[in-house]
Picture 1 (cartoon, chains in turn brown, red):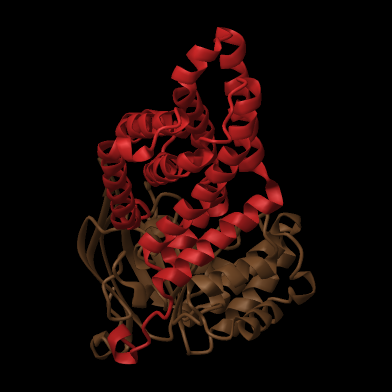
Picture 2 (tube, one colour):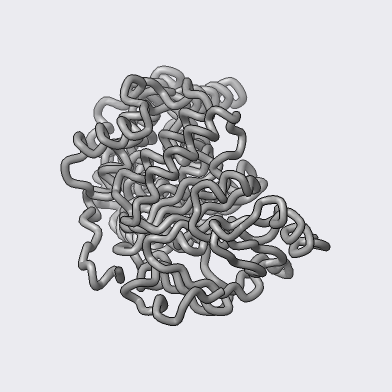
Length: 247
Length: 236
C-alpha cells in the first residue's frame, strides 16, 4: 500500500516492499506484500492468525529470506551480510530473546558487547531506567514476571538505539496492567526519531499508539488507513469482512 | 535514512563478538552446571560400563586404551554439544544472536570455543579416572597426549557445534545430532584414536605424522565450514 509518491525515496522511506513473497514448501505465508513506510511512522499491523504478520516482521528484521519480490529496509537489503542494517533494527517478539539464567544486567551487557556498543554501563543504566527495572538489574530473568520480562526485552531492543523497532505480538500473555505499561512505553517511543511497526490482535492497543493501521490477511496487506480516521466500531465490521474466509 | 547515508557501520569486531558469546556460554554454564555435570557423569558411566562388561587384562587395556578414551569423550561430548544450544532455543535467543550485527562466523567460533573448554574439562577429569579404573599408568604418556586430545577435540567440537546448530532447529534434535555428527566425525575419530594410541604406547607422536596431517585438515575444514555456513543456519 503506497502512502504518497513523495515519501518513497530511500532517504525518507524506512520500509519499501514490492510483491514480497514467502513460501514454506507448499504453504504460502506472504503472497505479494506491497508496503511503503515513511521514516518516523508508527504502523500497526492487524490480522488473524496465519495472515503472515510474523513472517513479514521476521523478513524486515533479516531473519527470514524472501522467496520473491523486492525489499529494502532503511535503504538496504536485509540478510546475513547486512550487518550495518542489523545494527539499526530492533525486534521485540512474544518470546523475550533473553537468557533466563542470566540477570537482567548480564543479558544487556552481553548484547551490548555483541553490538559493539560504546559506554555500555551508561546505556544499560538508561535502558533499565526507561523500563523501570533498575532495582531488579541483578536478578535472574527466570524470576521475572511475564510483564517484567517483556519490559526487559524492550530494554534489550532499545540498547543500540535502533532506527526501526519491530514489535511482534508483544502483548501476548500480559495482563491489562502490563499491557497499559507497554502501551505507555510504545507511545513514549513514538517521538519521530524512529520507525515503529507493531503486530497485534488488539486493535484498541494499535489505535492508541499508531499513525497508521494496516490489515493483513491471506499473506497480503488488504487495507491501510490513518489511525485517526478510524472509527473503532465501524472498523470492526470492515475487519471482519476483510478477513472473512481466512484459513 | 539509508544505512550508507548515515554511515553508522557496526562497530563490533569478530574477536569481540566471539569473546562475548564464549563468555556468555561460560557464565551460563557456571550458573547452571548442566553441561559439565551431564558430560562428566556420562563419561564416567561409559568407562565403568566398559570396565565391568569386559574386565580386560593389562595387555588388552594397552591395546584398547585410546579407543576406550575416545568412546567416552565422543559420547559425553555429544551430550554437551546438544545441551549447548538449549539456552539458545529457549526464549528464541538464537533469533537475538542472528539479529545482532555480529559476524555469524564469530558467533559460531564463540560457541565452539566454549564447547571446546567444556570438553577439555571433561577430558581432564576422565583421564585420571580411566587410569584408576583400568590400572593404566598415564604419567609418562601424558605429555604426548596433549596434541592428539587438542587436535581431536577441535575437529570434533567444530563439526559438533555446526551439527548441533542444525539439529536444534529440527523436531527430532536429540536423535539428529548423533546421526549427523558421527558419520562426519569418523576421520577425526580414527586419526585421534591412532595418534592417542601411539602416545599411550610411549612412542613419539611424530610416528603418526600422516594422521596428524589428516586431523589438522579436518579441524580446518570443520572450522571454516562452520564459520561460513552458520549465518545461513540462522535464517528461515
